[in-house]
Each structure stands twice: as C-alpha cells, then as structure tokens.
Length: 378
Image (tube, rainbow, N blue to C red):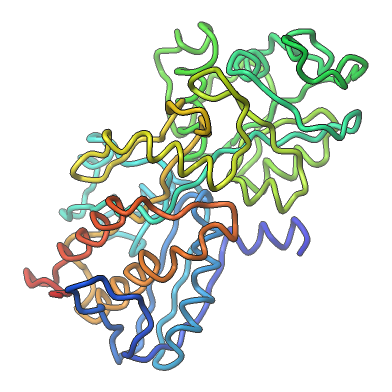
C-alpha cells in the first residue's frame, strides 16, 4: 500500500460490520460477553491518528468475528483536538473519540452537552522519531539532549559532533546534510506526548517552556509543520535530513528509519518496539489513576523501557445519548477489542494492555447507561 493510500485509510475509514449475537469475543471469567444488537446501528468515531491504524485493523477482524446483522463502525483521524471538540459539543457530533492524550479537568469542564466522559484505554503505543537520511543505513541513536537540540535549532546539521558523542553514529561524521525538524500543524495528542518528552527528558531550553505540554504547541523555534501523522511522515520522506515524531505504524509504512532513543535511566538506546512499550507501561503501573486518565509514560525507569510511550484511549459518553441498542453496539465492539482484539496489537507495532489496566478498562464499560439503566450487566 502506498503512503498516500495509508494516509487515506487512517484519516477516514468506514467499514460495515455484519455480526451475530454469538461467541465473537473472548469472555472474562465470571462475565457474560456483551452482545451486539439485532438492529442496524452506526457507531462513529473521530480524533487522533495515534490509535487509527489499530482501530481500522480491528474493524476488519471484528467483522470476521461477528459475521451477521449490520453495524457500521467509522473512525476519522483528524486530530485529538478535533475529537475533544466533537465530544464537548451540544449536541455531540461523534459517538466516541480517540486520543493518546487524556482530557484535562478543563477539557471535561468544557463539555456542553451535560454528559460525563469515560476514558477507556485500548492499546499501548510509541511516538517514534522517524528519520530520512541518505548518507547512512545504520540505526541512529539519539540522547534526550540531541532531540531537544534538534527541535530547538541548536543542532542544524547531521554531522554535528553532539550526535557522535561517546562513539555513537560514526557514519554521521561526513553527513553534511541540514536537519529539518517536522512537527504536527494540527491539534494532536502526539504533540502532547512529544512536548511532554521535550519538557521532561531533553534540555533546559524545553524544561523552561512553561506552556508545555500542549496538543497544539505554537512556539516551535525551527522546522515545519504538517497535518496528521501521515502528513509528517510524507514531509520527512520527501526531505533528505528530515526528522519527525509519529506513531510507529506511520514510520513503518513510510519506510523511514526509526531512531533508538536513550532510555530514562540513561543506560541504553531503545527502539520503539512492542516489547519496549510494554516494559515502560509495566514500570509505571503504580501511576495509573482510578479514572484511567493515564498520562503518557515519559522516561520510564528500566533498561528496556522506550521513553516516549502512551496509551491510546476511547473517549465515550457515560450516559449513552442515542439508544440502548446503539450503546450495545459500541460496548460490544470495545469489549471485543479489549479481549480478543488485544492479540492483534503487535501486528502494527502497538502493545496489548497490562492485565490490570485491561480489567479496569472493561469495568468502565459497565458504567455506561441509557436513561439511567446500565446497558451491559454481566
């Protein structure tokens, strides 16, 4: 599939799913699997493109698991900020939103439709630093200071000696190529993850930026912006010397180098693999809040922890606004993704949820009501 085709799929996939009310999800011990309704339903999502590759992959697998009765699932990746606005609107303009950035108290207070929003983590993923550089085929290692200096405009050429400290990246010595930092131009949960990393793990320049982190940071001193992860990937791919942050699947699809980034312990350089994402999440399980608004896992301890790790969430209404059958369709899909669907996460460079987080996520589904009555009562 071309990068342009991948971008189109990630930015607006729609798939009609045919389902039967039989065994399509892996049951949790002691629970009754939530069944899809017999009526036709459409469940629409919008938001960040961080979870989009796995959301869209899950649609097809869910279709195979439930092959009769008609439920249409859609997801349009137009930025986490757009997803937030759709959930906050009165009336809401989406059934759910996707994001790697949990809503803040201020975001929740801005909901104008009178409904509460639940955070349901569905996956773990990484912000990769993807690079296009013709003068080397070797893996590139970056310290936190390197990343901060690149995005601050301090490192402007790939042959900068700071990129070769400690004997690293020897091939870059003769690489007299300009660095082009690429960032998101839209309101993005991945910008939230990345700016949190800049503030916590890089240089004093970024640590002193009081406005960070944010989903749409406007104070970039150098570089260019592009809309969506697919846009960032395309700009990097078109530019010798380009570097940009994006979810791993976009870097893989664009065939870009993925940098190994120094871990939080400053002992190793870690690639953004499923195993490294899992290691980071496991190291931070003590920080999981009861409402599951889990912050990005930045600079987690552990020699094998990737330092730019985040959960991908569904944001759903606690009070289902449409009908009980509509709520059943949404709950059935999310439950399937939290159980059977987890086995597919690594296919696209994501990682499955830790067991304790998966259990807590499933319990969130039990809170969803229609006209005050729980929709799923296992």
